[in-house]
Image (cartoon, rainbow, N blue to C red; front, side, top):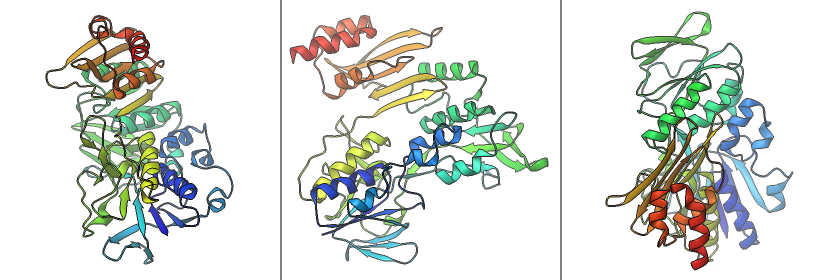
Length: 412
């Protein structure tokens, strides 16, 4: 059996490792789009700060790890897929035949339609090559604008702040981390960053970037202009699925997969940030987080190898460190129609808990300023656990969720 995995991020590596264990004697080919060994993008900001070297991002650090498991790792980018003759074509012209294919091509950063974003000195912070380009443009006395204060942008924010740069963050939405935080929490994160010396401009768009004197850049912030040394773009991502055009594989805002991670083609599977799969609430979502990618890859590989393994659905869960302030969002933190919610807020201490409920069950949570017991919230939401009398206790005091978990899981 020949298995081809296109995309060498966490999902692809987890799948290759699983196939090496469960489909012994098969040919396993892992195709990565970058010249480096497979690595974790989540570790890239730590390379920017110098706290880890580039090799610290590698997903498997043992020498000859892939070769020792009979996994052939090659460099190449997918250009097209023919499901009719089970062939993947790479940009360099090579055609790869397969019996089973996993698409784990991840996502790529979005470049907004803003004039000047192709100028020298404007970069994403998405690849190791990006970090190499950025490093010389940050540091004490350097002026930097970060476009975007979402999840990825906020991780990059911490690295840029740690570099000693004079940092301005520009976010088009009315709060920071808008897809992960509600208005209260997003504004608290903004206030925290401002206390750390970051200028945060929400409800603001970059109108254009132009070359300035001395090799610097002039950024137009809707009439106000700022001259900087570096512009970092973190305005969101989109799945790498363009090469599937004409393949017949169904794609929406991600590659549609069933509860076995199989696409609309019988011998093609998808996993990770490019896949739109089942979520715990009964819908289908793209959950672009590394734990989901790893689980996708493992389960897809088991199904590819003939070990039928249903995927129960991912839980949207994010944990973010923004300049030292920890925030989490789990499940349906915005709540649902007809549901209830409870909050505990201390703005001065940057402490916040919001719980959402549907009937007798907790379905979502937000926390700010708490680093403990996040797993307990996940357990209450994902299991799920009938709260019984604890529902009203939590409505009165959301901070008692640990006691609720201990009591209700003992009942179960």
